[in-house]
Image (cartoon, rainbow over all chains, first blue to last red; front, side, top):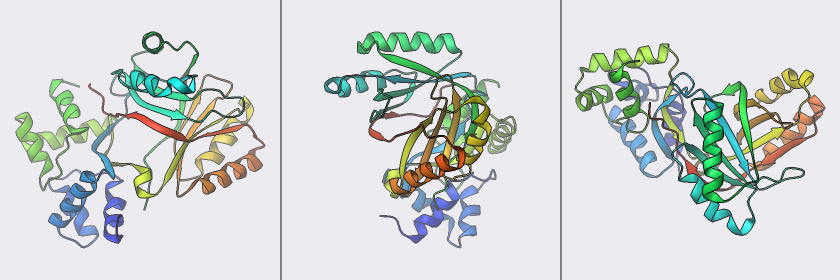
Length: 154
Length: 148
């Protein structure tokens, strides 16, 4: 459970850390608590897994990864756990989710991969396909980014 | 970007210190003065390599729900469709992709009923009826730090 103070703390750390020597003191002051209390709250939220990662988020294109592909896989239900784990083990895979197929869309497993270019993404997909023994998949390359931001929860 | 920049980036994605003087602590780890660490991070932000520094949350642990949506949108309607979709604050990612289902966006909200209503509203406003709502059933991996 999170209380009202947690929400205030989240309201600040969901944004961007001020770049000065004592950033947590600056944020603590905004909500009228001490730096120590603020740091304890953030540490506790992290320990409880509510904050899954605290740190910098990069623009991966700027950082040298110029191609990102979502690969959607059509996997027989009985094999999905095994295949999900196999694909998640690939270093190039940042996200791997099982999703319910829908309407005319049969794909039920999704992986995000990042590479230096499209060819590299295709090669990664090919290796993944062989490792998991799944041939039914589609590569969806991002052609334009319309929005990429972080959620404002509170 | 030089090697020191790369070391900083590799350190601050998942091992950012949650302590009183985090840049001082980073400096100790990397054998740099605090002021140099701050200066380099400021520059990496100005150059657009760092988007932000902060917390990333498990939305379900905050009692939010999230989903991935995909829509089939004819070329001439893309602009209006995207504008309508991006109007919702819970839409955090939105991409054009190379498929008949060409617009892919993520949606975070208090509950799925809100998202269902929003998708219905989007359909009414844009005339686009082919929108898939694909909530995750199981998460096998989320890893968002990049070795640079």
